[in-house]
Image 1 (cartoon, rainbow, N blue to C red):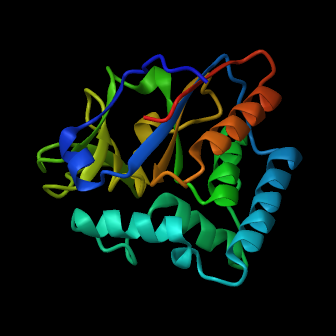
Image 2: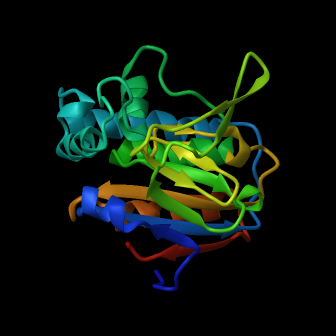
Length: 231
């Protein structure tokens, strides 16, 4: 694990809102992606089993780490029971009858870590990121480009909402609730940055980051994977 900085910044306003927030970034280059496989599907099934053991009959939002995330969402004006953080939303799907979706190998891998360890994890295509990535409180003027019924749709975050953005616009709304299609990992992605986000010192980000890095090297032999220390 290295302390060298990536082009990722967290604004003072977000730090003031959630002083316990921390994140681990993993930069991976030379990845090989493709459709979900039996192996990536098995990772998701195993993650659901690990989650069930961790929760021991509780609902995901009753886990202390998820409760801390709910408090952070409430602090910037979101309703956490309506717009859940990504880890809680995935955990609920993992425990439901339909189970977790299979997207592609890289997304399956990071979703498995998110579910197994109850940590919000996101993956962004580095080749689609414009400039550095910043976690800020939105003014409301920023653009978030998504799609509806196959048509391009431009939304704007609420003023004060916590968003990840780059020089072109918002890449993820409400911290880690909804990622935009522009920077998603597709089957053609070869370079990526993965963000593991936590609240408090007991979130387990370092162990989760090490596990994710190991899986990335396994599914993409020869990839150059760098794990950056929590910040």
